[in-house]
Image (cartoon, rainbow, N blue to C red; front, side, top):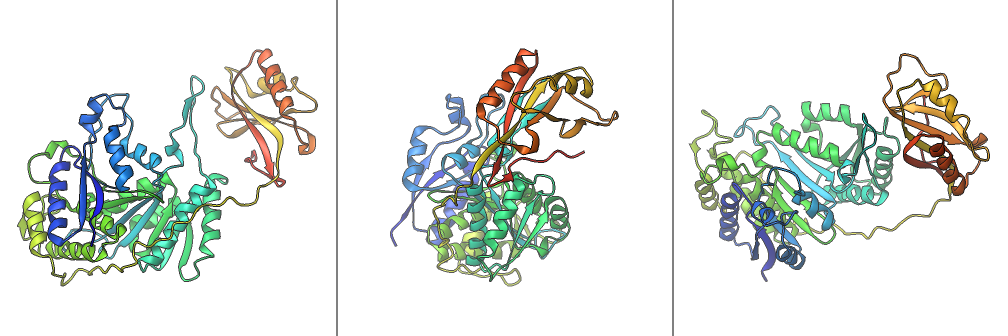
Length: 480
């Protein structure tokens, strides 16, 4: 077998120790790898590169298209970009895959039957990082959910389930409140699920879904969700399994992939030979499957399971009475190497099909273009102190060709007309202007309206045009 080139980053803190242990095991198992080592993280940040990764490292990743990365340290203070976020977005790593398995009774857990995979959308949602301070009192963060972003990660979740012998895919959203953003994710989930009749599917509101995930993780199989929910709940499930230190992570795109442990660089224990390499090792197992070496991946994983089963544990999972031998990083790697070719006797053995990595990559194609019609505008003001009726009275005098004030909200709550006097208001006001009967509006009319509002002495901090798409409103209604 020709060796597969991969890029390896030893990282910071405990990173070099656990990477060395991981690579020793892979070599002993017969992995056919051509390693390109790059430096990323703290030292690179301190050389003045704000994303922690210099051009040579980027060149290596572009060549190999596979990165096995140990944890890094981001220096404290401002001016430093998240390397993980940069890598995910720059390389279009849209699917974060986080398997979580309980290893009871050898690793202590209250959920001995859990065996699930969370697939998290990896680029969008609130993690777009678009934030603004708009008034003295109000800050905003934009939540961006796109149709292609949702489709890709949801389809990947179904393809992953099918390729790995899973039976059910569950979607978590909060579309009872966020009807457009999470509503889009839910709609795409239902549309795509219809193409996989061999797999069960269900959708849960994220709050009750999270409660059930924490209380009954064994009822879930593959779970797909937007970025923020997935970030939080994948850590929750990892902790439920017994140790975050055992959890691997894969970041998958159409052209590139990155594999890492989910834990941090733990500089407080660096250099002490006590860190658990398991999270990174299991991430390397996922990498071997991805690059088409499932037999080696299976061999490593089985040996690791046997080591855990034999009670040879690092400090983070060692328990008096259930563990048999406390070992450090190097000795743990030695124990896994000694067991290559063996299988667990009690823990469930893994089996990786030759086609486990053959998840289809589909080019996204836009659907039919909807007819888009401008029908109004929300004008956001920094205004106050004052009563909503005062603001409504003044703005009602400003109009352009029938484009008039319809409603005012504050923090999403209707306060004019006929608002409740008990409603607490900030200095951030959304003022909706529309024509009678929802008649079409010209862009020039919106511009003229804004000019007149500014000329009247108001501070316009933002506008959002209101559109219909094939006659369906593309904006939330105002209730109250």
